[in-house]
Image (cartoon, rainbow, N blue to C red; front, side, top):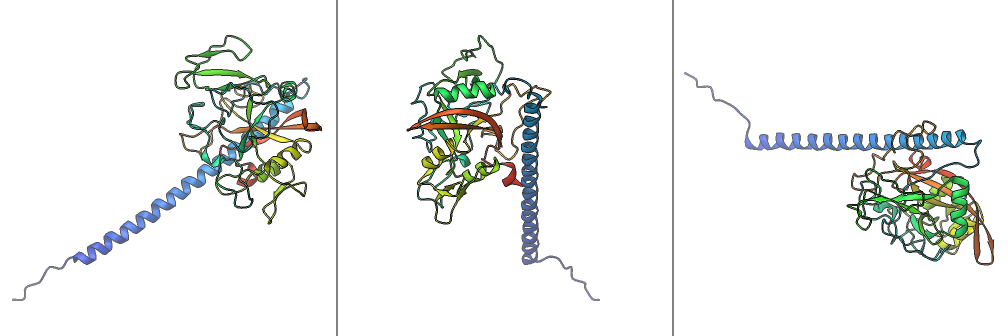
Length: 324
């Protein structure tokens, strides 16, 4: 009688099957991750367009009034920064010392490190995308007169107890951002604000020109590594910034937070401040409002003449045109 032998998988065959399953699983996970990232980018672009459309609708609806009211935007500077600098100072544009970084602002840790970048591969000197500029008296005046920006919020996260219209109100301990749910800070000469550097980078990409180009300004990098403003070669980031001051204007950046007058306005259409899904939850996730300020110059002194809404930017320094 013939005995039938039982056959099965050998160890080598089992290992091969396991390896194939592992490869397929890894590819599936990568594909899923790519789809999720794609979805976040599409939602981020949709949010940018929605914020832009909402702001333009809000501004058009207020066109018959003396000024557009963009009061109570979020500050992108440190919660404890109440020390005044030299009004109109442009010497610290590349510095991030006073910017929102590893602090609690609207429930986030701080601005994305992408906004501070690495060395600019196209220029001899590097500059952060967001830098710091100290408001002059004329800056304070035009921000309030043209856009209704009276004061900005810092450390905002929670219920507000208002005790005045001069920025002097808070709940909790002002000296500790973990315990203080809201602080309003008046604009004053010497107060530091975030500005977009024309020579700024995000990661290793020179995105400063992209932000300025998105609002219609002619700022580029040449193959020679030089910044150009209206095709004129600039010596450095500071020279480019000051050239823009008396040209098409510089860009200041403010956060679109839940406390500003745009939120809850049926004219703007924002029930709450939209956040960027492309950002991690431990980074600043609010969209940023770009304000263009134009100046006249006499000698070495710059006087602000006009402030206007210019556009919107995500927390990585991306604008609608670059994401499209």
